Amino acid sequence: MYIAFEGVDTVGKSTQIELLRKRFEDVLVTKEPGGTELGQKIRKILLNEGGLGARSEVLLFLADRAEHTERIIRPNAHRLILSDRSFISGIAYAHVHDKIEIDTLMELNRFATANTFPDRIILFKIKKCELESRMAQKSGDSIELRGIEYMMRVQKVMEELVDLLGIDHLIVDATSSVKEINEKIYRYIKDCRK
Image: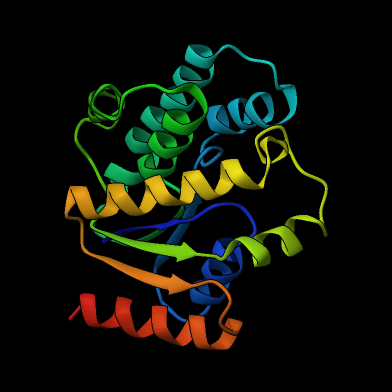
């Protein structure tokens, strides 16, 4: 089962994935961008370079996603896969930042993933005031530096996409305690695997 953890930066996706890694046997943990050797190189370019053209940025994310799907997701379909991000993030960020139509982005992602999408999505939601507080405590990468309003618009598009696509999902309040969130996600995954 392929489960994607989605949400804007600082919502706690990575923290929860690491906690869940310890609770499930035979779990494969991965991420986008950067889940493959090529992906790590692409991630450095995307998060540190900045100033890329809109289409170039989208195509780099798609190259990472294509490689990730071919090398990690499809060969391990029999396992529990927990991925920090997926095509949902890719579409949301590109739509908000670059004003590329969602239909166009969907077609590009269908091609990049050979129609391999997550079986389930865990979507973390955060309030603006909490996001501001968390972002103030870290130095941002080139995407985070686009600002709080940008991140809130991305979150809204993620919510809309999850509903539109009809992929089974769990909405998580990112302001809950780490323990509460972990229990909620653990129960959800366990129930899905029955």
